[in-house]
Length: 171
Image 1 (cartoon, rainbow, N blue to C red):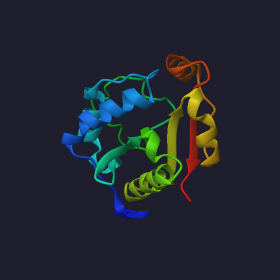
Image 2 (spheres, helix red, strand yellow; image 1 turned 120 degrees about the vertical axis):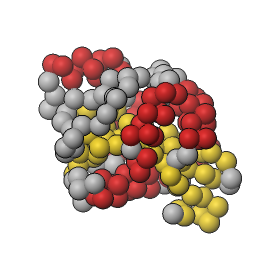
Image 3 (cartoon, rainbow, N blue to C red; image 1 turned 90 degrees about the horizontal axis):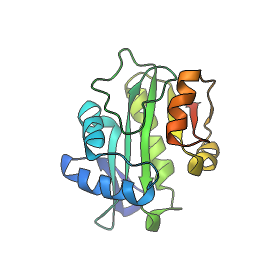
Image 4 (cartoon, rainbow, N blue to C red; image 1 turned 60 degrees about the horizontal axis):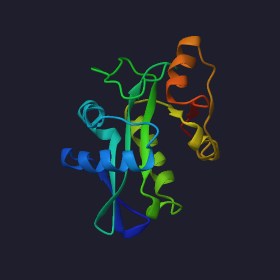
């Protein structure tokens, strides 16, 4: 699936991409560290929701997403073991674009690709946990806060004091 430029591609993530994913995650999300095994598990559990952005032949971003159920976020840096069944939403675990590739529409395209994966799974809601740094970006993409439980508030606080569980319907 070529996107925006002839030399740009969002493609299914391969296990060989995981080193790049971990390196980019540490670079763009230093306050929210996750082990490579977390990304590897998500890739194993939901390969259709894990994509790599290749720009000018270089790894430049990734999307990690998967089916989910309910409004209780997976805690940061925690293995899932299995995906909930039945799912009622598509969860964007992480979206990262290398600094040199930002502002060119690649993140919005990744969200569109997550919507397509959700539709294929028969789901009509995108959900994610936003950190304080990304709240404005996600609001511009049409995501709004969910009503959350005390249990969810504790999970969100493990990210940062302003983290929020956000959702939007798939149009």
